[in-house]
Amino acid sequence: MPLRPFRSGTIAASPCKPSVNLDHLRFFRHFLIEAYPPHPYSLSAVWQDVAALSHNYDFLAHALLALAAQHLTLFTQSDYSVQALDLRVSALQGLNAAFSRPCLTAAEGDARCAAAIALTWQSSYMSAPGSLREFLVTMRGWMVVATTMTPEPEKSLFRDFTREAFVGSMKRHVTGDPTSPIGGDQTPDRDCSMDGFLASLQVLRPLCGRRTEKRYLSVLEKLGRLARTSPLDALLQMAPCWALTNKMTEDEFTDFADPTNHTAQVLLAHFLMLDRALEMHFLEATGSSQFTFCKQVSKAWIVNMASGLPVGYEKYMMWPLGLARGEV
Image (cartoon, rainbow, N blue to C red; front, side, top):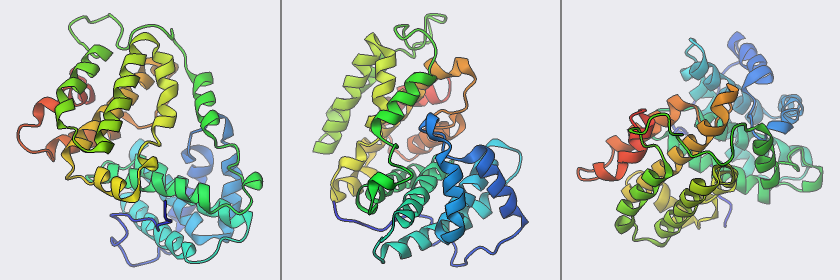
């Protein structure tokens, strides 16, 4: 796949580079203590080294501050959304400028990769319309940086950020019966089971005409069937499945991530809510806040997607929208 700069809907939001202020000190402290990317669970110490590295790269510093400001806005009573956006724009501009130069050292490769990861996690805390596409774009950018812009991968701070690390750390973190059905049987009239998920996919199947849509649907069906018999195995399969859009060609990705591709939007909604159902099943009992997406954000994304679909698509969104609203 050809290397492409980060393309973001927020990139034109502000032409100004944020000036340093006291809020930035709070953001930096919050990043160090709480707002660093939570996955993989066992590698959080890497972000202490990244924080030290940020003093040499403005785009990285702004990406970390943007993430922390967004995290504070979502999880506290403070509203730093304007600062988070300005810092994000500056980070994206700086990162795109860095892409125009060869990456010659492991440190610079780490700075670029860390900024891409931070921007991806910030996207996962954004609930405005278009934020899901922001997430998909930055996640794809993270993959490009990690696989093509690290001169000495064996020396990288992120050398252990592997598929196995994400899956393994998730497995150590979960609790609960690995074979108990999703949704349990406490409320028989409230069907958030995999039967409902798979039935919804059957309704959706006739809409899937493109090759990417058929492939994505096939993966969802396999995950749903696996979740019916072994929910834990299904949860652990979700980690690599997040990279499905990264494996698309540039043209396929552009088409699939387009908000006007209504079939893809419905498929993504099902994937997001399947992930939510599985994580809640195993992680909610621990009191963990380390869900892939905050419940508030995932609900906003699903509601935004549903509101952007044409009349007649309501039946395709019944399962994900019902789960997002707590109605199933």
